[in-house]
Length: 97
Length: 412
Image 1 (cartoon, rainbow over the protein chains, first blue to last red):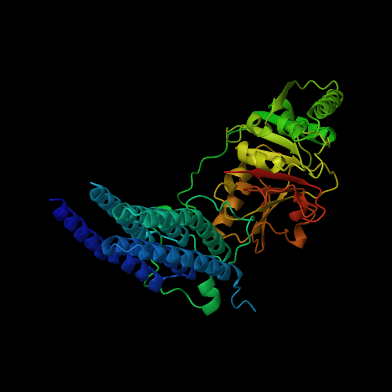
Image 2: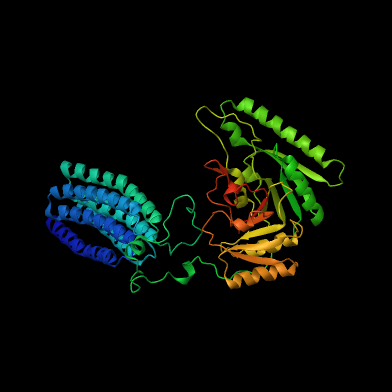
């Protein structure tokens, strides 16, 4: 009984992994479409959040805690990249001459 | 059991990520999209991690997972704030904004968004659908109410030391010509006392100054038959002067000074120069007159037109209450023909000549050279930034250098 419940829960977690592809695709759509740079950077921020979720789900499914390290690393990279992109957006003056 | 709990956490987390992605897709502008991405996105990712550590149930995984959640909670708000600030400064579109732009004049903002500046082309119109009609904040002439502000019935004047002799005669004259009730407010800003090094000494000093100002009022009133109702209070002037009766009450203020009556007892290392005077039009919803007090100014009233829909009412009110005698009126700004027509109509109602000086007023820059002898300026909103002094320059000098006349501010 317990084993079968575990199996079902595990399968459902895999289903969630597939379900998470939809937000991923929606965010990628926003990233491609834009329309502005700001929207693309925000889509990137969102993308890193989805990636953290994916890594955490993978950790649960495969039962390997290394994927949680991956989640932390992705969150870290996402934060640094967002900061850098925000700096770019703020400083970039464009062609104003 | 724990497996089920873990699953619930994961499902809820994925749900939040889903909602966040839908928000990123469907919201109108970058700022709203960011609001979806940062809040719901963080919560979703954190819940999925929580579910994952519950299902693993090992010390290593728990440490790592909790560490990641804490890291997310710490960094995402920072990143979101930076990104929002950068998006505002870079001029990203704000099609979904409903109220006024509160940051205007506080942060420097580019006129066009980055992609327009870099590519010099319009955004791909296929994907940038316009905001729904109800979210647009651009006021149009048609849907604006036609009614006027109410007739002037009460003149409130602020009694502040050193400015009594300029404010009182004007207030008396306006009240007399409108047959209005006159009430003088002698207020003391409590925060000004509390911000000082020694509140006891400061309080005594400020009270003494206020008394002197009131004595001056008595002497200026002289034997004139005008009855002045005197109010004395200590507290927050912004609360004490709050009022919203749409033109029934005129607040007469000096251009400088505050309800600390010029006292100066700052804490060490802290210079204290209150900006409350410019915040009063926002709490006194109606006309606020800043008296310049100079007699040698022309017979000209400048209406600075930044497209405010209530500016017609304001002009109508100021002419009806004859705040300035019989002035010539100049509308300054990028006024459309339609708006100009309405201004002319109002001026004609009171037999006043009305001209238009086309000038590309961008925010709160100086008015054009030809208008520097103005007797008064009519503004539809407070000048931004809301600082009585900005880099050493008093706020009225930002409108016209060495300006001597009045400023009438009527907020919507």
